[in-house]
Amino acid sequence: MSLSSSVRLSRKKLSLKSKNQPFTYVEIVSITNNFQTIIGEGGFGKVYLGNLKDGRQVAVKLLSQSSRQGYKEFLAEVTN
Image 1: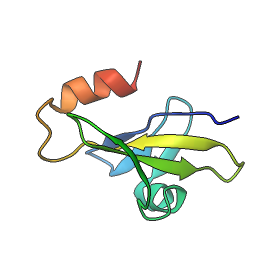
Image 2: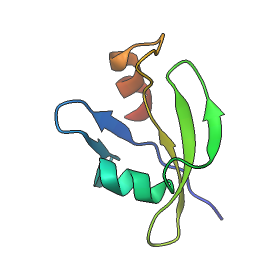
Image 3: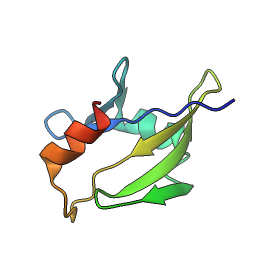
Image 4: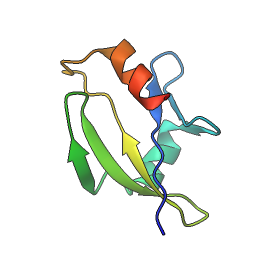
């Protein structure tokens, strides 16, 4: 069984947060194995496969600087 979770990039603190647990950018690099495996892409940017230390698989969505959707819409999507 695999679980998915979205994370978001906080522009102020350069940290990534899920609904339950904050992650630093360095932790996200580790979780995604340096953003190695792209599992999707859309108007906001790329989605990467990640693995948490407890073995759960997660989807890590990062907002692209060239996003056509915008930061507020990205936050609305990943916080729902």
